[in-house]
Length: 285
Image 1 (cartoon, rainbow, N blue to C red):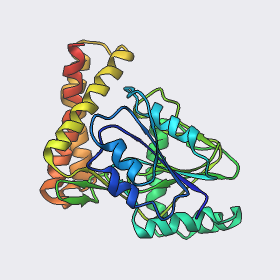
Image 2 (image 1 turned 90 degrees about the vertical axis):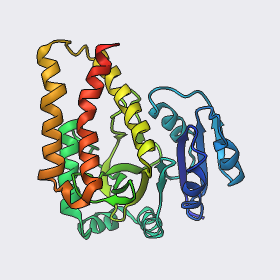
Image 3 (image 1 turned 180 degrees about the vertical axis):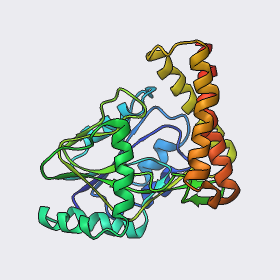
Image 4 (image 1 turned 60 degrees about the vertical axis):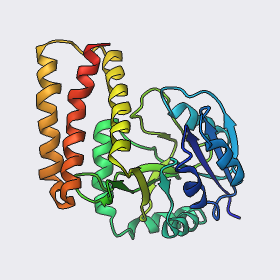
């Protein structure tokens, strides 16, 4: 058994948790779940599959529970997942291969990734938004690309892929700031990439997508309030008109979301309108 902890934070994930756990049970030395007092069978199912479950509150910033799971992990390496993510056999093999490498081998491996240019561009976009990711030193974490499942297909255009997320981290070298819903995990060391993607089944149905989108715009509205965004004509025009148009043009045209068919159009349209919806919610806070 590998020295790898798998951790999750959950809330009412009975429809997802079994498939997620089963995708990693063969590579995990332990599976730790911090559950925000689910009202469904999430805890029961997780325990039946051998996971250690810690039941706690369900804070608005979900990263708080992710950090609790991170703190309780004992493995030398830690893989953090969401319940609607699946680790493919190819990714599982790559994870085990990488955590068994020494520093020199990892450095060499990073130069051989077929998608390294795409990953580098994506990371640069993230750093333009969030600031520099990682620090000098040994490799302490890895981005994993994600394929997002939306209304019957995995999206590959519209700026959706590679949707890199830092999920594989060395114990004691990463932590969630737990300040912002959009925050990047902070890493004390160098951050690399894995090649094979996570499968992210976040929106298998339109109703689930709308529910997630609604929660997301609620959080955006609260962030606007926290930042004291002005409630004036200038802000209204920016968030009701300018940003939605810019986002739709960026994702559907510049990043070729149209190549994902009607799913690409729906995704671009609804992701663009989140600015307007969140601003309208903010006006009534």
